[in-house]
Length: 197
Image (cartoon, rainbow, N blue to C red):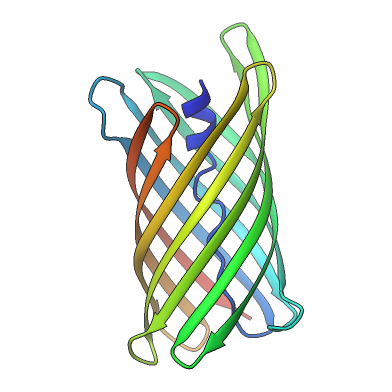
């Protein structure tokens, strides 16, 4: 149960510093347990908007998440919201950023239990501009989940991949993700498309 709810929220925080203005993002995440003794997988789609006030003040973002987690062939549909604050700094080709986020996920009724999860996350991200369009990215995120009627759980997610500016307004991103959960690890993939207005 803990794995199901935490897995549904693992990739909600991956915002780096950017120029001032409004942007929108659609992100898809997939995770699967590496321990074959437990069948655990999940996928999520997050749609969000962010307004960046500039590097000094930072950015606020908010979005909706919908997905499905599968634990030993039991499917749990999840929906909810995520809000956060991020800031960062660019030093030449290097970008350092961080984000603090809060999420509430509502998996609804699971057996005889109706529950929801409140999640707090802290993330740190680093990017290195290989070319003007291509950036190597990596990050780490710690997630603390408070599960109503179930208990608490934590997870740590590490990511590494690339971000590519297709045009001045459109950016695509693909990263490998490894998550350490209480009781096991998952491997996954995150892809995202962002548009800057």
